[in-house]
Image (tube, rainbow, N blue to C red; front, side, top):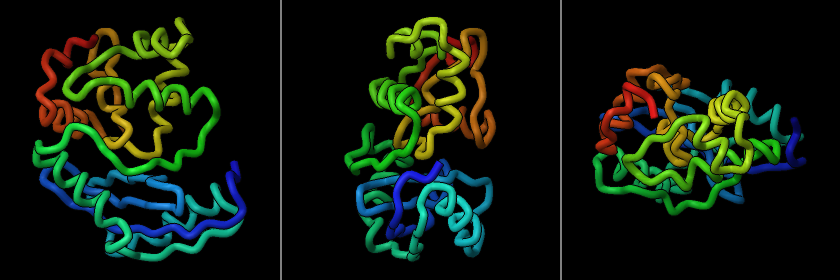
Length: 181
């Protein structure tokens, strides 16, 4: 799905005790946060492949200064000193995905809900599997807190694995998430 014709994308690595990844900022806002098990020396090749699917033409520039505020917010979150993010978002997705991502942003810090509850909250009761798929397609995990959604009888899944999901939920002080919501 090509979203726009041209884009200047700035990126930088972020590494904290809770997570590591590569953040990408467009002219409009945060458009990607790639959580990774291990930071690559140069993530540019993978970012170029992603950008080619989203933009007709994209220029990628490593620029920690442009991402300074986002990186600070991510580090504050990882240190337990931030509960919400203030950076503008630039998310590309279907209308349904965007509704799910808006619903994710409404889940309070430290709380967990089930996929079914999120489906009902966004006006699509019975669409818990579709909500799960949209949750998994979230391009900016943590900032759009997809880790706060669990299966009805278990913790559910997470792109970087359940251990990383547990780290994020425990960082937020979430309770009883292992039994589902």
